[in-house]
Image 1 (cartoon, rainbow, N blue to C red):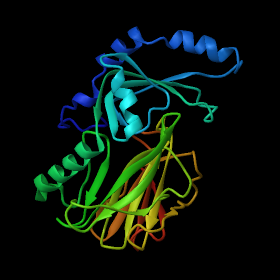
Image 2 (cartoon, helix red, strand yellow):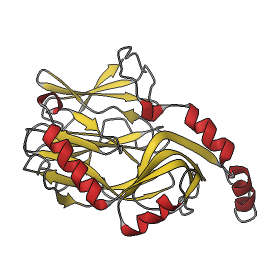
Image 3 (cartoon, rainbow, N blue to C red):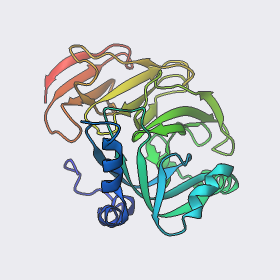
Length: 279
């Protein structure tokens, strides 16, 4: 919990479903099959809890109604506790995603849920990044203006995102860029906007060994990767920035969850950063 003793209980992060999925999945047979083609590869089991997918590539139901996955041909999403088997060194090979009790949500149901979420949004969510039950991250600057990630594709435990914007409280969304992370895929780490134009988003690798931050000055239409002095890609896991009076603070850790690392500060809204020493 990284020191947050008062964190909320999250049923989507239960560990026991992972054990249940692995007991039913044929992952050993899949490894044996892959080894005939990809000799000497490294295999990894990745579990991120109760997840939502919008494409059926690699999805295998180990319990429940297996036809729920086939409904993805009509769009929508399917959600369930899922364990991915993949080869981290070969991102061209689609992972096998074993899912327990998949539940399909149609495009119409998704739209209705988005409208419900918009109508029930309260002031406590303004100015904060939050994640819905399908794993989609939102940020509202005001009650009417907000941004959210949209999953466009997924492979090897990573995702390719677009960024959408609303100006009517979430009733309608406009795609403002289909490549906010400038060609990179991974898992979204968060998004924050300080005004209508300036914001920062984060992307971490699937294993959370490292991450990158990206900055926009045109409301999310374009982004550039933030360069931190003395830090190279793949070396640090950068926390999303936090505001401290008139400056932004980013903690850079060797890996997610580490309690030591390097502190970076910016006094110009994230345009430039300086090393403020170890923490």
